[in-house]
Length: 127
Image 1 (cartoon, rainbow, N blue to C red):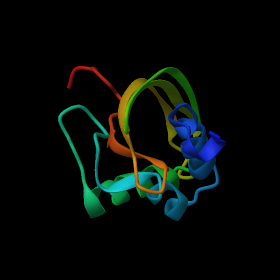
Image 2 (image 1 turned 180 degrees about the horizontal axis):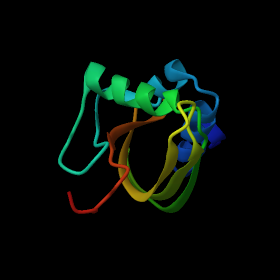
Image 3 (image 1 turned 180 degrees about the vertical axis):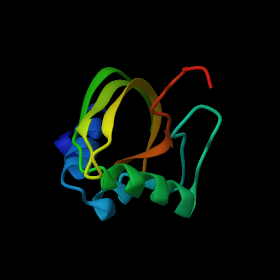
Image 4 (image 1 turned 30 degrees about the vertical axis):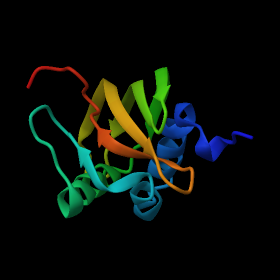
């Protein structure tokens, strides 16, 4: 039986829940150890750099909205196309208005949980 936690189509709902709860540990569990985050075109980050980029976004204190547009599964890989946005006044008073269409690759691990292998929030946007 497929549940919420092992369905790639729901991965972004899990991400948004962790992000909106400002829970960095929960966010980290959604990534493979070797996952790549591309916070802006041409800047792939891994490891501690990836984690620092996530924590920077959390420091704004703003919610993320995400909606999966397409989800394609081939064995233990999934390609997701996701529309997302982060908008509002950050904790430091800065106005934030970010949005994009992510192109993400997930991999299903041995425990059945889908995790980011590649988190590319701006998809094919030019750098």
